Amino acid sequence: MSAVVPSVSVVLPIYSEQRVLYKVVRDIKRNLGPALLEIIAIVSPKSPERTLRICKDLHKKHAFFRFELQKENPGLGCAVRQGIARAKGEYVLLMDSDDEMEAAAIGRMMERLRRKEYDLILASRWLRKHSFVGYDPIKLHMNRWSQRFLRFLLGLRASDMTLGYKLVRRSLLKRLGLEGKRHEIAVETSIKPLLAGARWCEVPTIWTARTEGASKNSWKNHFRYLRMAFKVFWHYRLRRDAA
Image (cartoon, one colour):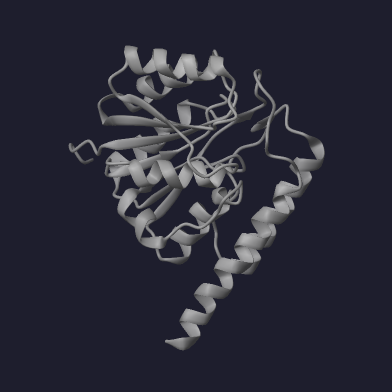
């Protein structure tokens, strides 16, 4: 087990979350411990004024928390790419700010990273039963088949390539050149590293429906995921054939 603690930058896109942000930041700090270098919150300019006030308050309370307005809007992918461009840590933790993602999975990711060097650690909702709490049944059915189709299309073994919850080596992310503007950024940040030969693993996690604000991720976004997958697939296939 490595004694070196890698530095981690957390990219946190924010839309309309408010009081839950205090819990999310507290959970991140507790689970990352000394590995936490910074939390970079990218706030949508359409967020309510109270969201901005809470971000200012968090910045005053925590030196590691900083925030800025999203420059290219709308789009989750735009916020994620902006945050990655600002990150300085050896690794980047990508996650949502709505408390739907299980904070304890961060500890599992760090434990795996201490045992072995990885470029990508994915949080997966499909490694255990009953990992979806309050998930829309139609979206759950589409998610299951989307995962199967992606594994078939891309020849990959990862069980959850559409969840935007993962720990990735920063240098790898920047080298790959991300393009996603909306929720398809979640699948892009999974399959591009995997197809590039990243050393990877998965840890189990639980997804729980948010208690504050409205989700911007509709079931229609599964089509955006698949479109991004086809785009990346053809890029890597053409490059492989050219070689």
